[in-house]
Length: 68
Image 1 (cartoon, rainbow, N blue to C red):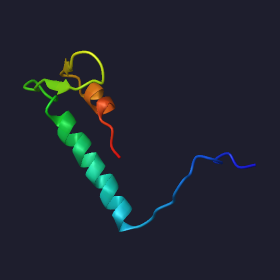
Image 2 (image 1 turned 60 degrees about the horizontal axis):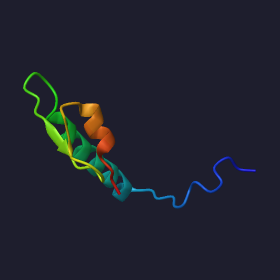
Image 3 (image 1 turned 135 degrees about the horizontal axis):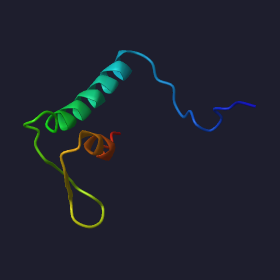
C-alpha cells in the first residue's frame, strides 16, 4: 500500500516547471517585500466576505496569496 495514493495527480519535470516555480516565488516576493523594513507599506487583502483586510505583516500577505 502506497502512502502517496490519491495525492499525486501529475508528475512534471523540466525547465518549464522550474520557470513556473521561479515565477511563483517572484510573485510572492514582490507582494511581501513592500511590507518589510522601517518604511514598509500597508497592503490591502481582498477577502471573500466582509471588508478588505489592511495589514503590514508580511506573513499574513504571504498566506493570503493563492497561486495556480
